[in-house]
Amino acid sequence: MAEKMKAGEAVIELLRQEGVTHIFGIVGSSFLDILDPLYDRDDLEFVGVRHEQGAALMADGFSRISGKPSVCLATNGPGVLNLTYGIGSAFVAHSPVIVLAPSASRDHQYRGSTQEFDQVALFRPITKAAFPINKIERLPDALRHAFRVATSGKMGPVMIDIPRDLLPGAEIELDLLPPNTYRSGQTRAPGDRNLVEKAANLLLSAQRPVILAGGGVLWSNAGDEVVRMAHMVGAPIVTSYGRADAVPNDDPYFLGHLGRLGSEEGIDACRQADVILAVGTRLSQSTTFYDNRFIPADASIIQIEIDPEELGRNYPVAVGIEGDAKAVMESLLERVRQGEPRPSQQWVAEIGDWFARRKQRLEDEGRLSGLPVKPQRVYAEIRRVMPRDAIVALDAGLAPNFGQDRLNFYEPRSLLTSLDLGGLGFSFPASLGAKFAAPNRPVINFNGDGGFLFNAQEFETAVRYGLKVVTVIMNNGCWGSEKAYQRHAFNERYVGADISNPRFDRYAELFGGTGFYVERPEEIGDAFLEALQVDGPSIIEIPIDPDEMPRPARLSDVQAPQAGA
Image (cartoon, rainbow, N blue to C red; front, top):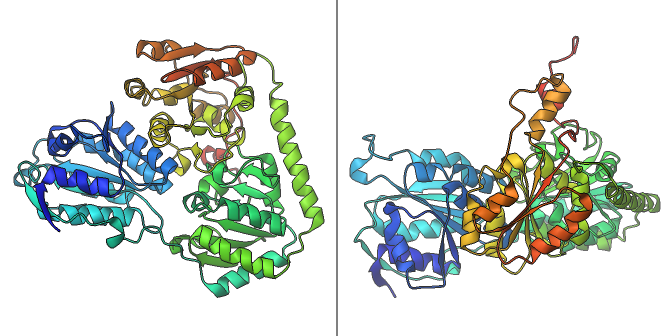
């Protein structure tokens, strides 16, 4: 039965109906009608941040860890503009973030009024949908449609533009419909049966199969199915870039990830594959570099993707199956089981050798000596004491990227990275969003010194909300990734690569948090364990070797072509 209520109250009731628990943003005059109903309720919290970019990144982190929609809210003009990087991050990660974006009053639009901007046009390329409303009566339908689009198929952010003159004093008739009456949620398309049959036959005949697991495995909770298939057909599991949490890392068939600073052993396995089962991955540039350095030209690729536009987009496929990763894998497992698979024992033995080699390689890095400490040694020390259920956020940049292959993940939804966007400043706000989503799990953020200062102001947010997030800042005093290019391609002619920083441990203390400064590798583990017990946010600053700069993976992109090439 319809109930008459204020428009701002209706927004809150609609969000509550969708299970939303947090709205991320900065208080603004354009949406006080939405904030006011939150004054005396505790089922939905407005998280006030210090920069709108942080709000969008927190929402992204919240959705990635919870698997549920999140909401961010900003005032029109500059506030909404500041959301774009974080919403771009959500778009790349397929996070269902709803953006409520007030805009200039209707009477003032198209006149260059104060804080007026074509917000819808700006957000269209970085959302699944962006649209305005021009009548307050349309707001309930618009919100329902936003959640419907954001949570269907390959999920992603949606933006609603709300002229600021629509809300004040407005009342609407609202039917509080349960979400299952206007959207189906995530469907489980099992894929075409004939294509599943064809894929099963390819796997049954493969001598050197490899499974490449991507983000679709996480969104559909298909990790168990991937592991079962690996053991059934004798296939190593390699994950796409930034998706190392797709399967438990202690499984003996797991060999690490592809991409920048990828696992040597996983790369070796992929290079020898005759059949690659690519599950929930579009085989993106950050994973494959769009060439054959990892993916053999003569390998038969079985690609499972919920988005049909991604099938065969970057590599030709032997079989392309449109469908949900979990549902398709269930069908494929049943068909392969019926075929009585006989894995190549020689290949299975090689998988065991690779697994042992990777374990030994990482253990050997725990003996790296010298000061400043190598970033590899930092991860070796922390890996020894990292809680099994920890959520880890890795920023873009050189030092955090070392962690992609050097930390272990045992549960799905445990790793946050900026993925193909590759944006600095991502991880700290995302880690705060993760803590709101999973308050009982340890959350650890890894930053370089440059990336942390992109959104360092959100440390005050962490203090204000008492968020127990441990931030490890590896300080090499430079923009490491770019300096590596200048070393290898420009004859060590460094321009703009070196920077200076404050003492980050003292920065934490100035805001009311806890700071640690650790120079010796044998002290890292103890400092980390102490930080985990701190009642609030903390920073561990570790000076690292500024000369530890591996050869960049995309070095050829900045080098002049060779004569005759």
